Length: 159
Image (spheres, rainbow, N blue to C red):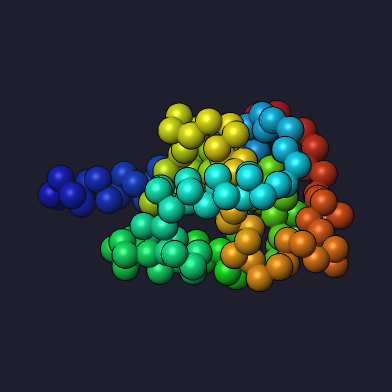
């Protein structure tokens, strides 16, 4: 067996363990209180996005940035307002806290890095505010309010 074959087999064996650990870490991240939305928060989020995020997620938040074709899985398309990790039922919008967690911790198994050490809490909230603008107004529509559909996860089982 070549070194690459051994590495690939090792990854396939360990991948399920990594994702469950990452999911627990994601859910257990202590999220600070979200600030009230404002134009200054939105503009600051736009500047951070234009500096750090557009390379993968694109100018329009559609996941078609200049490096997107080289990434697998492809970067998230924010225009669909569909997010992988959330505390709301499948198909529902995530809460702001869910987006904050994903930005802070990244998404293991993807090219999405953890921004917790590179961006302050305030900057991560600013990015949350800005990426919601790509969702075609869904985050402003009371009908889709994610805070009405939060699932109570409860305590994890002992193991």
